[in-house]
Image (cartoon, rainbow, N blue to C red; front, side, top):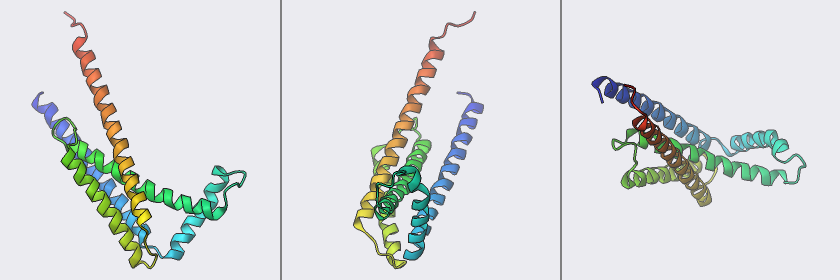
Length: 176
């Protein structure tokens, strides 16, 4: 690999890592800002979203509104942490020196960070007088695991396609 292509690849990697770090910080701000809302604010936000989505998801109105809203709130918990896990795993893959492979210790540290974040998120809800639930920590952490798994599959697919492309180039007949 030439010096120029190595420089380009490293700068591209740094740019992508910077974008992922900003996205992770923005997601954390979003998660914690939602947890800092009062129970009234949170309930109003959930109700408005449920009112907008329910006619599309449940056009025959088979699900009682309170049940629908409850599941929507749990899905929001799952989704926030799914995004966080996805972004964190991608960051680890971008920063990995060994061909984008995330090692078990790095993956374990990432999962512990995500679990700690879920615990802090529920603790913040206690401070905002909303109360917290152990079930929400499990939902958050499940979302985080799902997000890291999706990112893992994405990096695996990208690696596979990249190797396949390289193999095709190497097997192509040379033009003499």
